[in-house]
Image (cartoon, rainbow over all chains, first blue to last red; front, side):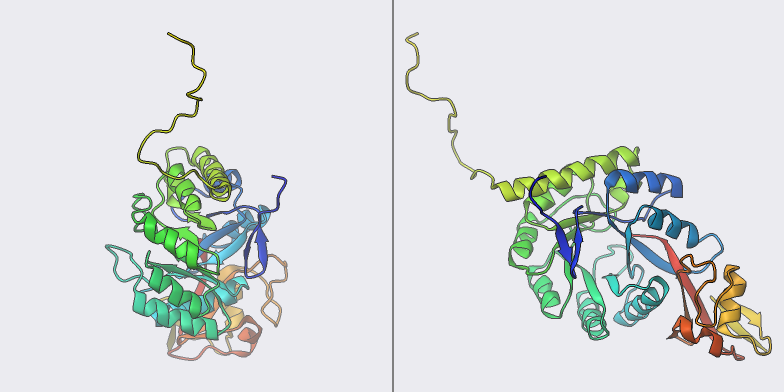
Length: 258
Length: 78
């Protein structure tokens, strides 16, 4: 592309608007190939108890590909747990970026709005750059931004469902009002979902299992790379308005007598 | 006399610091500021009794009887 259309978060510029997480991949080798195909420049990791197998091989893979790490607080149910996990992540990974995930229950994995707000406030005060994983609620998204979130990340649908974007109107409203980057996070099933997110005005898309659990993850990662580029271009190009009735594109005048 | 490491009991050893512990379980040699001597990313964080202990302090913190220690690292996730 001749024009510069970088995604900027907390002063860091990214060429790719696709953030591919590392979750759900059955093998590190397959994950590496999918990450490379996606051309992502930022990826998520979770924090768990140290084992001899964990850690270093994943770091090698990500450092080799030059992919920046965004630690998450997945599995946290309270603000207190999420803050502790973020502090451990900052220490382990030497980054003050955190994908803040505070979920309400294991069945829905939906964000707990009250705990999320409390954790965002605390983490911002502690100097973290908070990427807030949130419901598709325009009011809550704005609150998180006002509390100092570096990015707001509304869900398309619940984590891992692949149901796509269930409330496009709300996503569009969130994107149109935000002054920080809006990242569509969770629920993406296939390439058209990611393209739609970008067309609705999101600044980026975050997904993991849509790629890692696809039958051919590398091919799906390539599809998402193109989908995000296509959706972004379409969003900037300005689509035609929707009409009730047909409108011919060929001229009506000067037709031959039949 | 024991402490807990990631939920499992371990016998307390005299004058055993967090630096010794991290070096032992990761198999990496560490400087007194907690940096790995091989200069590759260590990617580990330590909390003692739910308080994060920055790596530059590991060499100065002795493990005590009854301590609850968590050592975390990054794994694949979301």
